Image 1 (cartoon, helix red, strand yellow):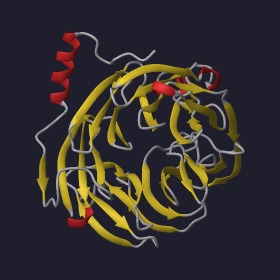
Image 2 (cartoon, one colour):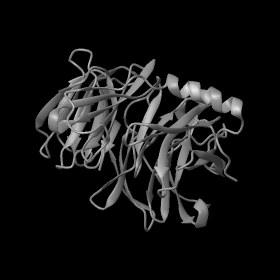
Image 3 (cartoon, one colour):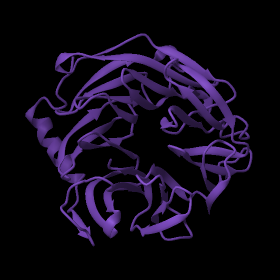
Length: 366
């Protein structure tokens, strides 16, 4: 049963103070138009892993709307149909709803979850994947009510936690990526990449039912880490492989929802998957058995697609498809000014929007 995230006056007052602490004075620089999110605006999450800021880029005038949300160092953002969600990924983190007018609507705790993704099922319901717990969370989004959802314990390794990562909903199917990492052995993968699917039924008053879970394994690839993104009528997910070994189990998996099956698994040779957005993907290059990234490279297409652009070191955060068929890249290089880069559909750099912080994630308002 869904319950309100705040139940007593004392907690309401505490939460009110916390919300004010997560919100700085908003400001604008070279902004054009009203302070509200509109089509083709780019929501930018910046972080130094100590603190984070959620701001907005308006490409048409290179304008910047700052201070939508200020929080801790491990946040992630998801755009909903009519609101922006900010997830605090800490084990006892939270989910915050920010209206397209920039006003905070509510904040709800996600105790014990360690949220990694939020997937809208409708304008009233969403699912949150948990990294530190075996059960999903259900969120009634107009009010910020949270409930514990179904358990995925059956898909975990020996430590009992499946490490749910990202999700995708295409009515009526919800599909999730599961990493199955061994927490007793440095978070090493314990088997092939796993995808799980269930049929969702949304009933009256926001009630959601889950059908039986079905699974497919991606032989030869381990540790799915990117978003599940649609491209050319199918879904793709990038796998990072075993970070403490070579990149032989890193690559790109392509699958379809109906029938639920893997179409192909492509190894990316020495490159480990970092981010994916439609046809675009970023791979990172590191020496075997090393976590130190030497370079990050932009590609368009399959695993063997040629390099279109690259940057030295751990220099790229997220990617986001742009409406003209191009892509946006969050550049956070130690040797260059932080910026949001816009490439056209051919992979040619068109714009460089200087950014005052270190950009980490990007989301384009549809």
